[in-house]
Each structure stands twice: as structure tokens, then as C-alpha cells.
Image (tube, helix red, strand yellow):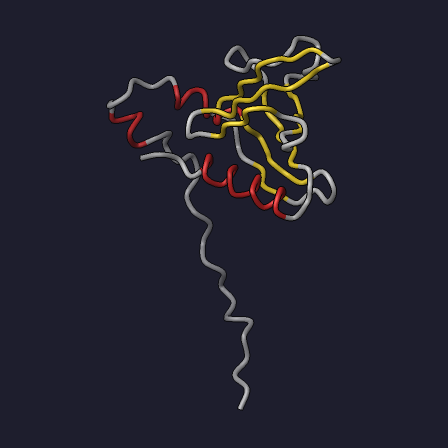
Length: 140
């Protein structure tokens, strides 16, 4: 089954553009990410993915790819969906964050194996139900 993550990234991107905001994409940088050297800090990078800053932007189910200029030089940028940490509007910070821990481990599982199909095991049980009653009141 395809992850919902690329669909959510596309939705937040469209919302930002529709509202006149500048969409920013935060990503974890590793050997699978293609960005110009020297721009990542502490293994992370934040990219302006707005229409004015990118050329040939493509957000598919596997990666975010586009061309952008860094110090006047055009570069091809590729960020696998598993490395996307957040997408948000620069102007107000509204958007969505994503957990990237364990994503690479999951991506490296053999396709078709039980582990790959089921995903990583849950490490903690769901929280217990709240012992108190509903906060709603009946009004007559």
C-alpha cells in the first residue's frame, strides 16, 4: 500500500500556493538526497519550493524533484519522500511535520517480504482510554 505522506505533502503545498504563502520543505540530508554541498546544516536542509523559486517541480509518490538556483547556479534537487521532515508556509509556520526516524530502515526491506508489507512493528501499545467521562453536556 502507498503511504499517505506524498499525498499530504502535495495537499499542504497546494494550500500554501492557493493562500499566497511560500511553501518550505524541510528534509533530512543523507546519501539519497541530492542538494548542493555546503547548504545542509546538521544533516538537514530547508528548501523554498514555491513556484517562483523552483522549475519543473514534481512531487510524486517516491520523491520531490525540481531545479533551483543556489548562488546563481542551477541545480537539480531530489528529496526522497522518506526524507521529508516537514512542509509549511514560511509566513505563518502552518503545515505538517513528519517522522523520518526508521523510514530508511523500512525502505530497505525486501519488497514483498512480510516485514516490508507489514511495516515496522509497533513499539508501544496504544494509550489507555481516559477514565473520565465526556466533556460534553446535554442542554435542554
